[in-house]
Length: 150
Image: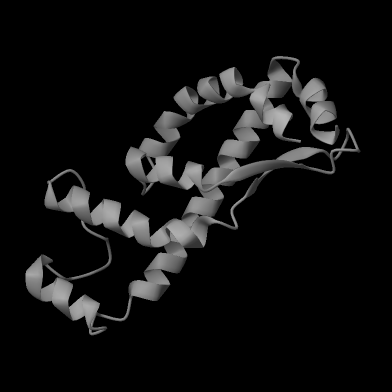
């Protein structure tokens, strides 16, 4: 199953370039998107049925990187490259960092993180669908589907 992804590296690069606009319109920076994609694996669901087969994103590792996404966002905000987490009235700074470390934040942390994870999962699945459309348009889908099964 690992070889099927090796056979579409060039196609992934093409879809990556085309998908950059969609990522830019999302709530994720390109650095965050890179982390999300690192934690994502792709599978072909129903690979044995040509009519139902489709690429799906396996996002089970996303929860492990969510804290790092928050760190990336924080670092970018400190450098002036990205807004701080939306939905918080906090101005940031040392005092808020200490409050957060002690668990005295505004309580939106867990909910906001869950929402960001869901948004990441949706965006990755959009990418998977775009990748499949690309492979189909290039006449490569059937070969990739069969290679997945081997």
